[in-house]
Image 1 (cartoon, one colour):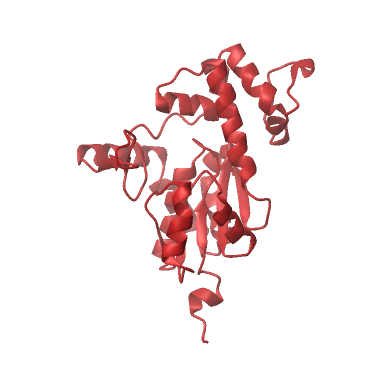
Image 2 (cartoon, helix red, strand yellow):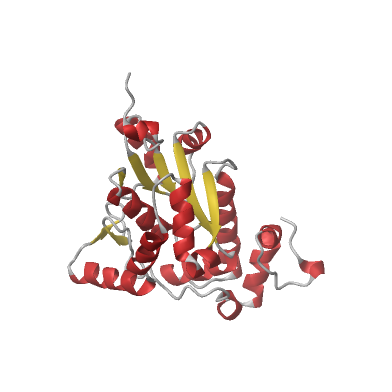
Length: 260
């Protein structure tokens, strides 16, 4: 059987825009989807829950193009495809303390110690659910924000899509925080915000998957002023080892550092 050009070049696969909550996963989704679509190599899929993936994959069968699926959680059918070469994933990790501050603000919730503990456990479970393999590559949030064009080129290389520096810089500008805010304002003004799930109060703009309050101050270290000492302690006690292993400095004294 004659293989298509996409198949020969490895462009017939699933692409997962993964990573942590409130860590730029929607921006990753937009960037790699735009690269793939403008290269005529595939398309983005509208948002589905991670639990929907198995049925969607069965419905679509083995892809003949690149299909971009946004998910924070790596379900078993995704893991199998990542391990056997039928998928690749790009993902960003972020200081968990800032993740929780951003999530609490988005949901209008006070980041109490109990809330922070549960969120920390959930974030770690999501992170650890992604397999450690060549198909999954992680970027640090701080670098993704500060060196967006370089990260775009690296993501493109990882998923085997052409992208030069000029294109990467243009994309970084096209999807800058200010341009993202304008997209959100337009979607709200034009009535294009829809429930992420039928009946759900959460809304997003189809295609871009942007929420009404999606783009917030993305500075690193917001937790220093926005979390109470008890809330910080709740996070660091659970995720101390994870934070330090990823280059994030703890606030607790050595005797108090978490070992999880």
